[in-house]
Image (cartoon, rainbow over all chains, first blue to last red):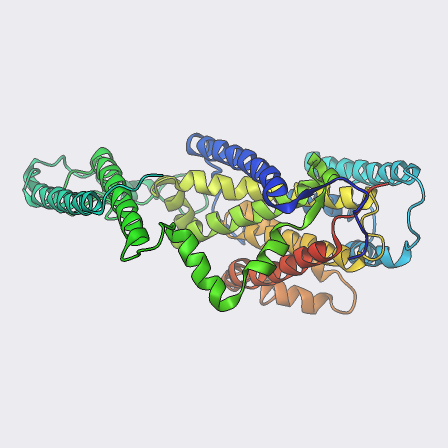
Length: 132
Length: 339
């Protein structure tokens, strides 16, 4: 019960908010249905069976680890392994460091800027990892 | 609303029951009549012959042929001995389904007026009152349902978290369907995925949904996190909500990592090798982490077994508990107010 929303305009959770969520869910389910229909005609498919003796030319992890994988080419292996752990710990304790309540909406732009920079770096590394 | 008289309800229920029985008997008769004689069937494809000839192909891995097409009808919907088309069982499902619906409706209406001299009350209301009399759920329930939600919380970027939760439910449903057919051994994993893709009805669609919803879940999870970060919704008093959210993201990635190995093809095998190598490079605990992930120094069938157990048992339990904590904290504190 941290903040009071008395002066705000509120809607009841049921049925108004639930209805909104329901519409979103139906939209997502329709999308999922289309993906399923697509899957009938274009299955995900399989590569060659796993063979421990035969290393393929481009052994790559999943796309969400590609940025990390690419980073490992520029820095020593140990640091590359510590980097994600440190990143996760920093993200975990972030709210305990950045404690001051926001004063003005200008802070949103600063944070958005930060997020965009990090996203661009990650996407760039991922693309580099994909093409190389 | 005027009530139909009880006599008519009784007549309708009786009539429906009779009709269902009659139809069922008719189908049985049809199923047991020898419409297709064994010697009239087309000769089965020479799977043994194909298998013995294609081993000599110029590839360095054993050729795994798709499973021979099943000549028997699938017993989920077909009765033994009837023709293998899809339309007969579909029509039967439709017929029995609608009759069953009529029957259920009749029972519902009958039970609603059954032996009551009081004004008519729907069965749903009646059961709700029955539970409410015993457990007094009405007050907490109305408190839960009528909790005011700020109007800004219906903007689209507030829906990202909910979409992630929905995708998790979809992953659960499709994952259970895939687990019906999947076999987590190095010998059978690849062939069982081929079986799902080629033989199981809608198997390729289910696998496609599971595949793309997994990728979508990672993307939308990160988008939700970025939204929360930009709008400062992690600020006190919502620190623990942020912490549980980060843990959920890590769990999502762990789901991706463990699930990626399961098809047991070259891509999966070497992706897991590379990913566990990164974990193995950690100082001090590197070797322990590597051995925990691979169950030994190499990726083997043991790794597959472990990843499968993590993927379908351990991680879902932890994720559901964490999601419950995440949601309860949101309910207690309300959605953060933007500036």
